[in-house]
Image (cartoon, rainbow, N blue to C red; front, side):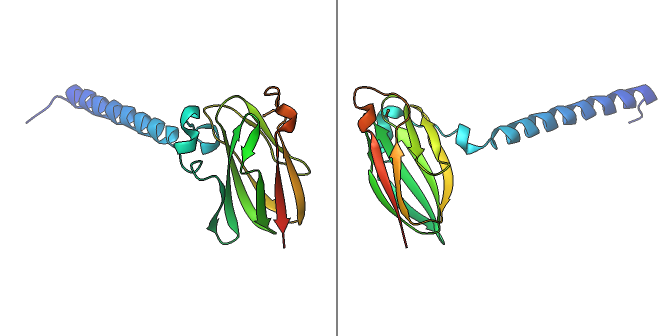
Length: 156
Ligand code: CUA
C-alpha cells in the first residue's frame, strides 16, 4: 500500500507516543514496587500475633552470622523481653505494636525507633561488644510506660 509522506510521519509520531506512554507507565510501576521496605511494611495491629514473623517472636538465624530479631510491643511490655545474641552478630530488629505508639530504644547503641500501629519498624545493628543492653520505651504510652523494658545480652 502506498502512503503519503505526511501520513507516514503522523503514523510514526502516533506509534512513537504510544511507546513513550508505555515506557512511562512501565517505569512508574517498577519504581513503585521498589520503594524501600522500611517505610512500606504494614501490618494489621489487631492481627500482630497471627502475622509472621510476629506469631513466633524472638531471634531467628537468617544467614552466616546474620539474624532477625522480631519483637512485639504492647502496653506495657516487649515479647520476648529477654534475648541472647552471639557476639558479632548482624541483627535486623523488627518491631510491631499491638496497641498504641511505643518507643524502642536500646541504650548505648544507635537503635532508636518509634513503633506505630500498622507499621513494622526495622533497624539493622551489629553487636560487637559483649554485655547487657537495656531496651526502653521512649514514647509515653500510658500508666505502665516506665515499666516497659526488655534486655538483650550479647554473649561470646
Ligand atoms: Cu510503651 Cu511507653
